[in-house]
Amino acid sequence: MDVRVPRLAEGVESATVANILVSEGGRIARDQVILELETEKAVGPIPSPAAGTVTKIHVKPGEEVAVGQVLISVAEEGAAEKAPKEKRQNQGKGEARAAARREAPQPEGGPGEEYRYESSSGLAPPASPSVVKIARELAIDLTRVKGSERGGRITLEDLRAYVEHLQRIAYAPRPALEKAEKPAPKGIDFSRWGPVEKKRLSSLRRTVGQRMHDSWSTIPHVTQFDEVDITDLLALRKKFAPGFEKKGTHLTLTPFVMKALVTALKKHPAFNSSLDEASAEVVFKGYYHFGVAVDTEAGLIVPVVRDVDKKGMWDLAAELNGLVEKTRQRKISLDELQGSSFTITNQGGIGGGHFTPIINKPDVGVLGLGRAALQPVLRKGKVQGRMMLPICLSYDHRVVDGADAVRFVNELVQALASFSEKELKR
Image 1 (cartoon, rainbow, N blue to C red):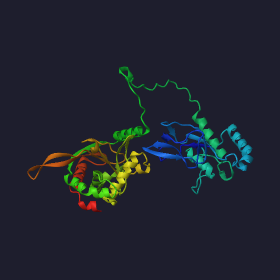
Image 2: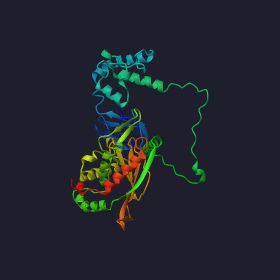
Image 3: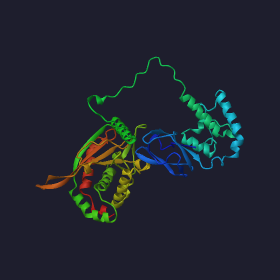
Image 4: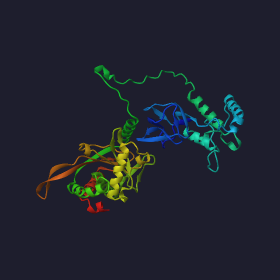
């Protein structure tokens, strides 16, 4: 039995082998995790569908694999004893049918791409659970497979014949080109000027880079800068932090910002939207799910805190701390990385100031936070030392204009500067 790369998530066609947790010759149990795959910033376990012995490992750590590719081969326990009598009885008949299909030309409605199963009831084509499972693992659309049994039922031999047909198409010789293709351009040989070391980009870094490039090249970014007086807010944090610690969580600046953002977004809903480019519609979201950028050893990962408007400060702080820890340990799931309506990125903890954050597409806006610093501020005719927080709002200029951004930032500044103590008692 071959264990293959399953369908991982919608739109995800490949992954990188992060860890191999078994060895050739070793015995494994059913549902035992045999390896871990890294995809879309998350690391997911792959369990064994059966107990047995690992006969061959086909991949290596760091290797990129595609959906349907073989990962390991397993000799199932008692496979020989449990072979069904029907299989032995029908083996010759099945082989004859398969041979006939291979030798005969493809008829209309055969395993070629021209066939399409259609049902007036909308049901899937008839097939056994094992055939459906194999087709799912190989990412094969069963409506393209012509069933040979009564009622169009698809057998394993039908599925195998269809796979062979696809392989013949894939490996058919290409016609010679009239002009030779241009060779791929070579990179710069930096070793001409001194010693170098090469390190392949990780799957995560390639994913982050591609998404940032897509966002930057397709969204007209504009960044609005401002500073917030958080002197009183920090005093509130200092007052309530010990109580949060006693209840088992750490109170940071981010939950304050998240609550203030909800206030500003409710008054300026365009910033809590997405642009549907296909229909040219702005989708206004009735939920407040905030992506929070987390700096990890592997790169930038953005888990999502959901329903911020419905949660108290303690719940927000506890959930945020838990998500950050899971993210840094690479235990975050794909679902926890999707569905944001707005994004926050904080460089203050490592000393950053003003910067221009890139929008986390398909969000419309991203708020960057810098490091708060004590500055002289004129208040009521007197110079006072106040803690000023630099903020940076990048927004999609296709959806909102500069005047909208100024009003939004003004609202956010006011919400942070006058943060209510009542929010901390909820």
